[in-house]
Image 1 (cartoon, one colour):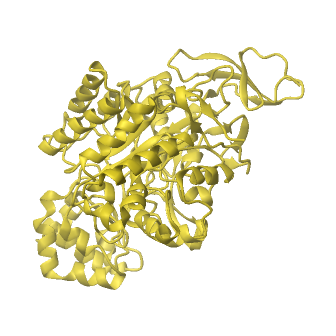
Image 2 (tube, helix red, strand yellow; image 1 turned 120 degrees about the horizontal axis):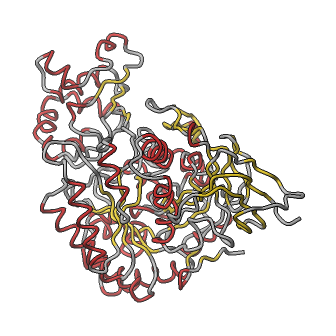
Image 3 (tube, one colour; image 1 turned 45 degrees about the horizontal axis):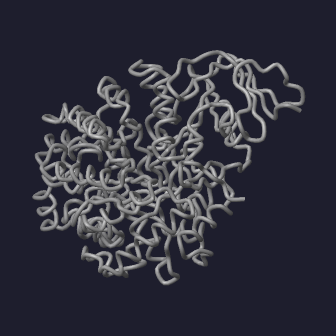
Amino acid sequence: MKFDIVIKNGTIIDGTGLPRFRGDVGIRNGQVAKIGRVTDTSGAQVIDADGLIVAPGFVDLHTHYDAQLHWDPYCTISGWHGVTSVAIGNCGFGFAPARPAVRERLLHMMTRTEQIPFESMVAGMGLDWDWESMPQWMDHLDRLPKGVNVLSYVPLNPLLVHVMGLEGAKSGRRATADELQEMQRLIHEAMDAGMMGWSCQRFGQNSMQSDFDGTPMPTDLVPDETLLAFADVLGERGEGFIEILNSTSGKPGSSNQGKDTLFVEELARRSGCPVLYNAVAALDEPGMEKVHLRALHWLDSCFERGLRVYGQGVTVRAPYQFTLEHWNMYDTSPAWNYATLGSREERLAKLADPAVRERMKAEEDILVTVGVGGPIQGLIVQDTPGHPELACYRGRTLGEIAEAEGKHHIDVMLDIGVAGDLKVLYRTSELASTDAKKIGELVRNQHVMPGISDGGAHTKFFTGGSFPTDLIAWLARDEKQITLEQAHQRLSYLPAQAAGFLDRGFLREGAPADIVVYDLANLKRVPEVDYEVARDFPANEWRRIQRAEGYRWILVNGVVTFRDGVCTQATPGQLLRLGKGGEVYVAK
């Protein structure tokens, strides 16, 4: 038998940006064995791709499936939307290195900042871990059944805690010479085991993504000198990749953002490696209409100066749908941070307290609303479950209600929320502009990777993992702002090559057969607007999801994982360990 699977008569888009063509793909032993015309199909499974697109699976460099991978090998929702390789350990969050005494604390770090339920992590991962070091974590990942390929950054939060202790790591103090040397050694050790570089978030004292107790994360306050020393590790090795969520103010065009970009440039210079800067957004707010053009100019200028700085583009149309039970995205305001911490009873009391409200209103101007759904007055009251007396507010913005009732819009939000026992569902506007022309300008730039996914995080109000489907169906098919060739180059080839796993992200003879076969005319997210609620997390926890329609077959390493949206239960995913020189090796 010459081939295991033959994909016949498809329109092939190979991911490199070259023009599409009609042809066949022969797969043998998990790899693409032939592209063109395949006549020998004896004994092979034949996939009839007539009228369908055949393309490389998508690569997502910004996910938080570190915990979910333990109970969901397919890393959904990403796996439903054609993603075949994910990077975990983003924004400095992860579970290694980890001494037994800090295990629960590392789980708690994920609960507010990334909105992953603690009970689900305990039930899905347990606390009797079989790893402590980062190489042991990689071996653990290797043993897990996987429906997608997995890479891992070195997450700096647990690294700082491991070496400096929790109090020292969260203090923002400089590491001692011995501590710094030890952390550099551990990064070397981790990368020797195949980890792809390191990641962190830096939001400063009033972090937009704070710890479970409302305090900043260790990396929010880590000194510049420490991160530059970590960049030196990558420079010494001549390999690696940095992911950074870096904004002390979150206000595009502010002086602090200028300082942030200069620091990112220095990381790229010191490391000699690519840096993924999160995030680059197009905005519609007054005075912000050209922010994305300034960001693109900066990215272009970095490459002109030999600095490989890529922007993570906010391309997905995915508003937040949230309640005050779980909302944490206004943590840049100390008053909002205080008011939304604690038990339900404590939150209800604080949110009803006039003095607390006055502080919340006074600090509205320092809230980061860009990228979290826009100004508060634009929030829509979407649902008022269990409270028919509040139904009159459904479908109206807080600004409209405030004008009608002669109230401040924050009082309106909190009055309705408290009366609804914190279960009132609010809907933001989009995270950023939905002007197809502006988003097209972002994605056509070769220094921007589409997203932003955050797959596995913010599970109770965000579905960013649907971004590949949205990009193809909306921006390429419907709006024609980019070609399909450009879409697939940005979704697969660009992130894979930039991150250093050079054998994936394209269809080429000898490459792993990570492939999507889809019906372009019928590709869509389901539901498109109001998310589905699924109770599919351990400990009977729920999340908001968007499924996909139109993907006829999804293959990972030459094995079908989804057929018409139905999971085959196959787990052919591999742990990708990055080695020197850009080769990828899979531990046996």
